[in-house]
Length: 321
Image (cartoon, rainbow, N blue to C red; front, side, top):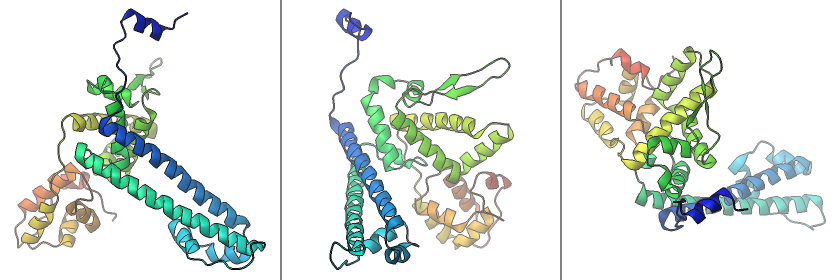
Protein backbone atom coordinates (compact mmCIF):
# COMPACT_ATOMS: atom_id res chain seq x y z
CA UNK A 1 0.00 0.00 0.00
CA UNK A 2 1.48 3.40 -0.94
CA UNK A 3 2.46 5.70 1.91
CA UNK A 4 1.07 9.19 2.39
CA UNK A 5 4.14 10.94 0.88
CA UNK A 6 3.94 8.63 -2.14
CA UNK A 7 0.23 9.36 -2.53
CA UNK A 8 0.97 13.09 -2.44
CA UNK A 9 3.53 12.74 -5.20
CA UNK A 10 1.30 10.56 -7.37
CA UNK A 11 -1.67 12.91 -7.01
CA UNK A 12 0.42 15.99 -7.79
CA UNK A 13 -0.24 17.64 -4.40
CA UNK A 14 3.40 17.49 -3.31
CA UNK A 15 5.11 20.76 -4.07
CA UNK A 16 8.55 20.19 -2.55
CA UNK A 17 11.56 20.24 -4.82
CA UNK A 18 14.77 18.26 -4.30
CA UNK A 19 17.69 20.10 -2.80
CA UNK A 20 20.06 21.38 -5.46
CA UNK A 21 23.27 20.51 -3.60
CA UNK A 22 25.23 23.28 -5.26
CA UNK A 23 26.63 26.67 -4.46
CA UNK A 24 28.17 27.99 -1.25
CA UNK A 25 25.83 26.04 1.01
CA UNK A 26 27.08 22.72 -0.34
CA UNK A 27 30.68 23.89 0.11
CA UNK A 28 29.93 24.77 3.72
CA UNK A 29 28.25 21.41 4.25
CA UNK A 30 31.15 19.27 3.03
CA UNK A 31 33.69 21.39 4.92
CA UNK A 32 31.67 21.08 8.12
CA UNK A 33 31.43 17.31 7.62
CA UNK A 34 35.21 17.12 7.35
CA UNK A 35 35.58 19.42 10.34
CA UNK A 36 33.32 17.23 12.49
CA UNK A 37 35.35 14.09 11.83
CA UNK A 38 38.63 15.93 12.40
CA UNK A 39 37.32 17.28 15.71
CA UNK A 40 36.28 13.81 16.85
CA UNK A 41 39.65 12.39 15.81
CA UNK A 42 41.52 15.08 17.74
CA UNK A 43 39.46 14.45 20.86
CA UNK A 44 40.08 10.71 20.48
CA UNK A 45 43.84 11.29 20.26
CA UNK A 46 43.85 13.40 23.41
CA UNK A 47 41.75 10.82 25.24
CA UNK A 48 44.08 8.01 24.20
CA UNK A 49 47.15 9.94 25.34
CA UNK A 50 45.62 10.53 28.76
CA UNK A 51 44.66 6.87 29.06
CA UNK A 52 48.18 5.75 28.19
CA UNK A 53 49.71 8.17 30.69
CA UNK A 54 47.59 6.69 33.49
CA UNK A 55 49.28 3.29 33.13
CA UNK A 56 52.64 4.50 31.78
CA UNK A 57 55.88 3.90 33.71
CA UNK A 58 56.44 6.26 36.61
CA UNK A 59 59.30 8.01 34.80
CA UNK A 60 56.91 9.19 32.06
CA UNK A 61 54.01 9.91 34.42
CA UNK A 62 56.11 12.10 36.68
CA UNK A 63 57.45 14.09 33.73
CA UNK A 64 54.07 14.94 32.19
CA UNK A 65 51.75 14.83 35.21
CA UNK A 66 51.41 18.62 35.48
CA UNK A 67 50.89 19.21 31.73
CA UNK A 68 47.54 19.37 29.97
CA UNK A 69 46.16 20.09 26.52
CA UNK A 70 48.32 21.52 23.75
CA UNK A 71 51.30 22.00 26.08
CA UNK A 72 51.34 18.28 26.80
CA UNK A 73 51.17 17.43 23.09
CA UNK A 74 53.95 19.87 22.25
CA UNK A 75 56.21 18.36 24.92
CA UNK A 76 55.50 14.79 23.79
CA UNK A 77 56.26 15.65 20.16
CA UNK A 78 59.70 16.98 21.11
CA UNK A 79 60.75 13.72 22.77
CA UNK A 80 63.36 11.41 21.22
CA UNK A 81 62.61 7.85 22.34
CA UNK A 82 65.62 5.54 22.15
CA UNK A 83 66.06 1.88 22.92
CA UNK A 84 64.56 -1.46 21.92
CA UNK A 85 60.84 -1.55 21.21
CA UNK A 86 60.50 -4.52 23.55
CA UNK A 87 61.11 -2.22 26.52
CA UNK A 88 57.81 -0.79 27.91
CA UNK A 89 59.41 2.59 28.59
CA UNK A 90 60.62 2.95 24.99
CA UNK A 91 57.46 1.68 23.34
CA UNK A 92 55.26 3.89 25.49
CA UNK A 93 57.32 6.98 24.72
CA UNK A 94 57.30 6.13 21.00
CA UNK A 95 53.53 5.72 20.90
CA UNK A 96 53.00 8.97 22.79
CA UNK A 97 55.24 10.83 20.36
CA UNK A 98 53.37 9.46 17.32
CA UNK A 99 50.04 10.39 18.86
CA UNK A 100 51.33 13.90 19.52
CA UNK A 101 52.39 14.22 15.88
CA UNK A 102 48.94 13.03 14.80
CA UNK A 103 47.36 15.62 17.11
CA UNK A 104 49.39 18.41 15.48
CA UNK A 105 48.37 17.29 11.99
CA UNK A 106 44.71 17.27 13.00
CA UNK A 107 45.09 20.70 14.59
CA UNK A 108 46.58 22.06 11.37
CA UNK A 109 43.81 20.45 9.34
CA UNK A 110 41.17 22.10 11.51
CA UNK A 111 42.89 25.47 11.14
CA UNK A 112 42.87 25.06 7.36
CA UNK A 113 39.17 24.11 7.35
CA UNK A 114 38.27 27.11 9.53
CA UNK A 115 40.18 29.41 7.17
CA UNK A 116 38.24 28.03 4.18
CA UNK A 117 34.96 28.45 6.06
CA UNK A 118 35.95 32.03 6.88
CA UNK A 119 36.60 32.75 3.21
CA UNK A 120 33.16 31.48 2.19
CA UNK A 121 31.42 33.40 4.97
CA UNK A 122 33.30 36.58 4.13
CA UNK A 123 32.09 36.28 0.55
CA UNK A 124 28.45 35.26 1.07
CA UNK A 125 27.48 36.39 4.61
CA UNK A 126 30.12 38.80 5.91
CA UNK A 127 27.83 40.54 8.41
CA UNK A 128 26.38 37.46 10.11
CA UNK A 129 29.39 37.18 12.38
CA UNK A 130 28.90 40.77 13.52
CA UNK A 131 26.22 39.48 15.88
CA UNK A 132 27.30 38.91 19.46
CA UNK A 133 28.29 35.27 20.02
CA UNK A 134 28.14 34.24 16.35
CA UNK A 135 31.47 32.85 15.18
CA UNK A 136 32.62 30.83 12.19
CA UNK A 137 31.20 27.52 13.39
CA UNK A 138 27.80 28.95 14.34
CA UNK A 139 27.46 31.09 11.21
CA UNK A 140 28.36 28.24 8.85
CA UNK A 141 25.85 25.91 10.49
CA UNK A 142 23.06 28.48 10.31
CA UNK A 143 23.77 29.13 6.64
CA UNK A 144 23.69 25.39 5.91
CA UNK A 145 20.34 25.10 7.68
CA UNK A 146 18.83 28.16 6.02
CA UNK A 147 20.24 27.33 2.60
CA UNK A 148 18.90 23.81 2.68
CA UNK A 149 15.37 24.90 3.47
CA UNK A 150 14.66 28.26 1.79
CA UNK A 151 10.97 27.45 1.35
CA UNK A 152 10.55 27.00 5.11
CA UNK A 153 11.82 30.39 6.27
CA UNK A 154 9.53 32.82 4.48
CA UNK A 155 8.60 34.19 7.90
CA UNK A 156 10.48 34.66 11.14
CA UNK A 157 8.19 32.19 12.91
CA UNK A 158 8.99 29.51 10.33
CA UNK A 159 12.69 30.07 10.87
CA UNK A 160 12.20 29.67 14.63
CA UNK A 161 10.42 26.36 14.00
CA UNK A 162 13.15 25.25 11.62
CA UNK A 163 15.90 25.75 14.20
CA UNK A 164 13.82 24.24 17.01
CA UNK A 165 13.22 27.30 19.21
CA UNK A 166 9.50 27.84 18.62
CA UNK A 167 7.75 27.72 22.03
CA UNK A 168 5.20 24.96 22.56
CA UNK A 169 2.28 25.61 24.98
CA UNK A 170 2.60 23.38 28.04
CA UNK A 171 0.06 24.96 30.39
CA UNK A 172 -1.77 22.90 32.96
CA UNK A 173 -4.55 24.08 35.26
CA UNK A 174 -3.69 27.51 36.60
CA UNK A 175 -0.08 27.23 35.43
CA UNK A 176 0.66 29.03 32.17
CA UNK A 177 3.98 28.09 30.63
CA UNK A 178 5.73 27.08 27.42
CA UNK A 179 8.46 24.62 26.58
CA UNK A 180 11.00 24.38 23.80
CA UNK A 181 10.19 22.47 20.66
CA UNK A 182 12.05 19.19 20.19
CA UNK A 183 11.61 19.41 16.42
CA UNK A 184 13.69 21.32 13.89
CA UNK A 185 17.33 21.08 12.92
CA UNK A 186 19.14 19.99 16.06
CA UNK A 187 22.52 21.17 14.82
CA UNK A 188 21.12 24.67 14.23
CA UNK A 189 19.50 24.51 17.67
CA UNK A 190 22.88 23.60 19.14
CA UNK A 191 24.43 26.60 17.38
CA UNK A 192 21.82 28.98 18.84
CA UNK A 193 22.27 27.38 22.26
CA UNK A 194 25.98 28.23 22.03
CA UNK A 195 25.15 31.84 21.16
CA UNK A 196 22.91 32.06 24.22
CA UNK A 197 25.63 30.67 26.50
CA UNK A 198 28.16 33.20 25.20
CA UNK A 199 25.76 36.10 25.65
CA UNK A 200 24.76 35.02 29.15
CA UNK A 201 28.41 35.28 30.12
CA UNK A 202 29.70 38.25 28.14
CA UNK A 203 26.79 40.37 26.86
CA UNK A 204 25.67 43.11 29.25
CA UNK A 205 22.08 43.30 27.99
CA UNK A 206 21.66 39.54 28.27
CA UNK A 207 23.04 39.46 31.81
CA UNK A 208 20.63 42.22 32.81
CA UNK A 209 17.75 40.32 31.21
CA UNK A 210 18.69 37.10 33.01
CA UNK A 211 18.87 38.89 36.35
CA UNK A 212 15.46 40.49 35.81
CA UNK A 213 13.75 37.24 34.79
CA UNK A 214 15.25 35.38 37.75
CA UNK A 215 13.75 37.99 40.05
CA UNK A 216 10.42 37.19 38.40
CA UNK A 217 10.82 33.55 39.42
CA UNK A 218 11.89 32.09 36.07
CA UNK A 219 14.24 29.13 36.03
CA UNK A 220 17.44 29.05 34.00
CA UNK A 221 15.88 26.65 31.51
CA UNK A 222 12.91 28.95 30.96
CA UNK A 223 15.16 31.98 30.58
CA UNK A 224 17.29 30.20 28.01
CA UNK A 225 14.16 29.20 26.09
CA UNK A 226 13.17 32.86 25.81
CA UNK A 227 16.70 33.89 24.86
CA UNK A 228 16.87 31.29 22.10
CA UNK A 229 13.71 32.72 20.60
CA UNK A 230 15.13 36.26 20.70
CA UNK A 231 18.41 35.10 19.15
CA UNK A 232 16.55 33.30 16.35
CA UNK A 233 14.63 36.50 15.57
CA UNK A 234 17.85 38.52 15.49
CA UNK A 235 19.59 36.01 13.23
CA UNK A 236 16.63 35.87 10.86
CA UNK A 237 16.63 39.67 10.53
CA UNK A 238 20.37 39.64 9.89
CA UNK A 239 20.02 36.96 7.21
CA UNK A 240 17.31 38.90 5.36
CA UNK A 241 18.50 42.45 6.04
CA UNK A 242 22.23 42.39 6.85
CA UNK A 243 23.46 45.28 8.95
CA UNK A 244 27.16 45.82 9.66
CA UNK A 245 28.39 46.21 13.19
CA UNK A 246 29.35 49.77 14.23
CA UNK A 247 32.86 50.77 13.23
CA UNK A 248 34.83 50.27 16.42
CA UNK A 249 38.01 52.00 15.24
CA UNK A 250 36.45 55.45 15.65
CA UNK A 251 36.10 54.95 19.41
CA UNK A 252 39.82 54.86 20.04
CA UNK A 253 40.39 57.78 17.66
CA UNK A 254 37.80 59.89 19.48
CA UNK A 255 39.19 58.98 22.89
CA UNK A 256 42.79 59.78 22.01
CA UNK A 257 41.79 63.02 20.27
CA UNK A 258 40.29 64.20 23.56
CA UNK A 259 43.41 63.12 25.50
CA UNK A 260 41.51 60.53 27.53
CA UNK A 261 43.28 57.41 28.68
CA UNK A 262 41.66 54.01 28.60
CA UNK A 263 41.86 53.86 32.41
CA UNK A 264 40.06 57.20 32.76
CA UNK A 265 37.23 56.06 30.52
CA UNK A 266 36.99 52.72 32.33
CA UNK A 267 36.88 54.39 35.76
CA UNK A 268 34.21 56.83 34.64
CA UNK A 269 32.04 54.09 33.13
CA UNK A 270 32.67 51.60 35.98
CA UNK A 271 33.96 48.85 33.68
CA UNK A 272 37.22 47.01 33.23
CA UNK A 273 39.72 48.67 30.86
CA UNK A 274 39.96 45.37 28.98
CA UNK A 275 36.23 45.56 28.18
CA UNK A 276 36.70 48.95 26.51
CA UNK A 277 39.90 47.83 24.81
CA UNK A 278 38.21 44.80 23.27
CA UNK A 279 35.36 46.99 22.06
CA UNK A 280 37.75 49.54 20.52
CA UNK A 281 39.70 46.80 18.72
CA UNK A 282 36.55 45.21 17.33
CA UNK A 283 36.97 41.99 19.34
CA UNK A 284 33.60 42.52 21.04
CA UNK A 285 30.41 43.16 19.08
CA UNK A 286 27.83 44.85 21.29
CA UNK A 287 25.83 47.56 19.51
CA UNK A 288 24.26 48.92 22.70
CA UNK A 289 27.63 49.00 24.48
CA UNK A 290 29.17 50.74 21.45
CA UNK A 291 26.42 53.35 21.19
CA UNK A 292 26.49 54.31 24.86
CA UNK A 293 30.28 54.46 25.02
CA UNK A 294 30.31 56.61 21.87
CA UNK A 295 27.65 58.91 23.36
CA UNK A 296 29.68 59.33 26.53
CA UNK A 297 32.85 60.09 24.55
CA UNK A 298 31.07 62.75 22.50
CA UNK A 299 29.94 64.47 25.70
CA UNK A 300 33.48 64.80 27.05
CA UNK A 301 35.81 67.70 26.60
CA UNK A 302 39.60 67.27 26.35
CA UNK A 303 40.11 68.83 29.78
CA UNK A 304 37.48 67.08 31.90
CA UNK A 305 36.06 63.64 32.37
CA UNK A 306 32.46 63.68 33.52
CA UNK A 307 30.70 60.83 35.20
CA UNK A 308 28.28 58.96 32.95
CA UNK A 309 24.55 58.79 33.34
CA UNK A 310 23.64 56.30 36.13
CA UNK A 311 21.71 54.26 33.61
CA UNK A 312 24.96 53.33 31.86
CA UNK A 313 26.00 51.15 34.76
CA UNK A 314 23.01 48.92 34.13
CA UNK A 315 23.94 48.11 30.54
CA UNK A 316 27.76 48.21 30.46
CA UNK A 317 29.75 45.19 31.68
CA UNK A 318 30.04 45.64 35.43
CA UNK A 319 33.43 45.76 37.09
CA UNK A 320 33.70 44.02 40.46
CA UNK A 321 34.05 46.38 43.36
